[in-house]
Length: 216
Image (cartoon, rainbow, N blue to C red; front, top):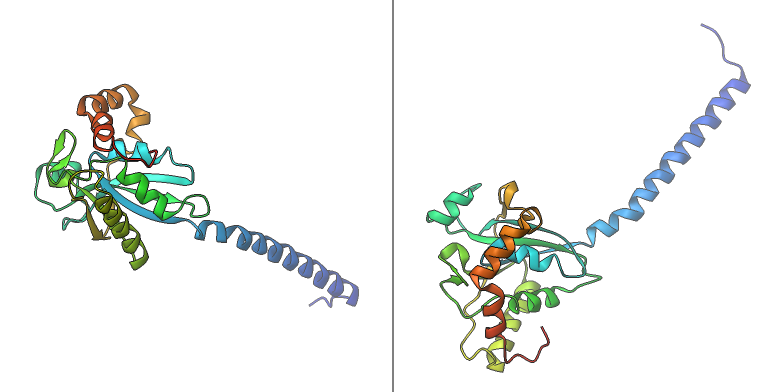
């Protein structure tokens, strides 16, 4: 075996130290960016057709992404056909990922209620049935407190003329819907606009909240 000189050993040690310093620095940079991802939070809302709920929340500053899906039921990995035509217990819902430094959960809940008809126990707008009912799915005590306080405030104001029937439910497994449902309003803008108008969603929301003074 060939004996290495002291100079070559020192050189190798120096190169190893430089490499360790480089990777440590890279790791430190990763750690700096990781807290940004951890600060993101999620909220789940059911408000009738998830195409429309998704489109509404995508307009909110601070919302990072939205996913249409199914939740609240008992069927594992349900399909749209099952949810819309069978007794699965699932709601059409949207998972909203947001930056709490830009928009609060309170603001999202308030926005949600002012973009649905919280007085309709049978569904939303032209869509009737269990899967189209409105609900806020809360993942912890803080979210429940916020959602229930919003309902209490709306009822106390008397602005709707009838009690809120939107349910506040514990979050359960959220199953993403089929790919063609995701960003439907972007992929099929003409069909989406026709559906939304024909279903009377915006007209009904405007009528329901006509006397509200919140500015929404």
